[in-house]
Amino acid sequence: MKEKRKQFSSVFTYASILVGILVLLGAIFPDQFGKTSGAIGSWVTETFGWYYMTIFTLILFFCIFLGFSPIGKLKLGKPNDKPEFNTLSWLAMLFSAGMGIGLVFYGSSEPISHYLAPPTADPETRAALAEAMRSTFLHYGFHPWAVYGIVALALAYSQFRKGEVGLISKTLRPILGDRVDGPIGNIVDVLSVFATIIGVAVSLGIGAMQINGGLNYLFGIPNNQLVQGIIIAVVTVLFLYSAWSGLSKGIQYLSNLNMILAGLLFVAILILGPTLFILNMMTSATGDYFNTLIFNSLDVAPLNEQKHEWMQSWTIYYWGWWMSWSPFVGIFIARISQGRSIREFIFAVLLVPTFVSIFWFSAFGLTGIEVGQNAPILFDMPPETQLFGIFNELPMSIILSIITLTLISSFFITSADSATFVLGMQTAFGTLNPASFIKVVWGLSLSAIAYILLLAGGESGLNALQSAAIISALPFSVVVILMAIAFYKDANQERKSLGLTLTPNKKAMKEYIDKTKKEEDKRS
Image (cartoon, rainbow, N blue to C red; front, side, top):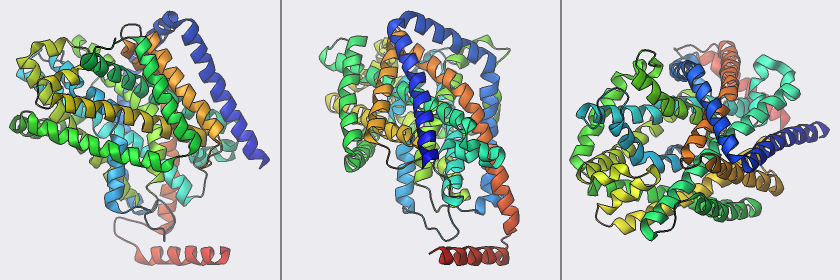
């Protein structure tokens, strides 16, 4: 018990101090904070762009290898464990993890941006349209979900099969041994907490910008940092109330509401937009995405200045954002996946959210581009307002806009509330019931960091948000690499002990299950 208090207090204290320093610096010196973070972010993208591209690609191929290898037969849990959720509910929760503020914010604005400023093609051409969809699919496709998957896989295997607590540091025991229980483990957990805070704060900042953009477009409310601060404050009160009172049912209802609202929006856009064009382009762009996957996974464009500059603002930013989100999403996915086989887990995590994203961006992106071609003023709107501009050109525009504002607000609350739980768990020795005080501290920290980044970004709040994501991902990427190595070492050793091959070894498996069952019977 003593050790638990020590572990809890050190991770919580160090992470709180680190976040507190950032908040103070950003509040006192917002301009300098923005310039410094921007300079560091630019240096990271220029110096480590190749590293991000390589790591994401290797993790993707590692996941595919695991899915087809004998290790895929291992279960995330004891041999007799059954999945807690049925397959349909599990897949729906994977889908909900893949949906978020980012998809609503970038659903139309990213394809439009690539169409106006493509990686290599001439702007506003057919080639630019093809590149726009292919690039968007790349950013929301297999690569981010491979990173989420490997973090979740290492956590679920460590927790449900090896009996460790749900801390990132404990997944490294196969290569670091008992050192994960000391200062090294604390450093790993502090890094995961910091990455989570930055990753979620980026989403909250984007959400505040888009809510403000919608209110400005619909009701003429000023679109500025003061209003965005008020929006963050109001939503903070709502999700802190939930975090403090532990209204898990309320969050469950909100999550279901997210799914319903997102589904309604998608169907509405598919029907009201250029339906046949969407279906045709989605099919063609998906083939283009698969056809160029390997090249675009590793291309850092050293000889193409146009694409090189484009990648700094898009692909590298996304890889940083996804890396910083991975502890948060990974813990969630691990929690719902007990009892699944590794093979089932890998292919579900890679395929389901990827194809959901393809459907989503095809409907919203292609509708936005076609609307912009007929109403060019749309292309001049800021990203946070473009979606509402598109609705203005479609039937039922007010209803669609209200649904969108409700959806963004609901995503804001559920994301922040879930993040406070994950952060509380990570700083309270992996407990599934962190104290309300801890959750409130992290909730306030998330909101403060989100607003500080908006202040530091000046007129373009996205600049500081992008820089923060890119910077925070760099140290945590090392942790993810170590997690992958540790997981493979442990899982492969167990695979050998079970005699698992591509052809089932039924005798070895039966002996192992019988042995495990006897040990469990003795303990009970």
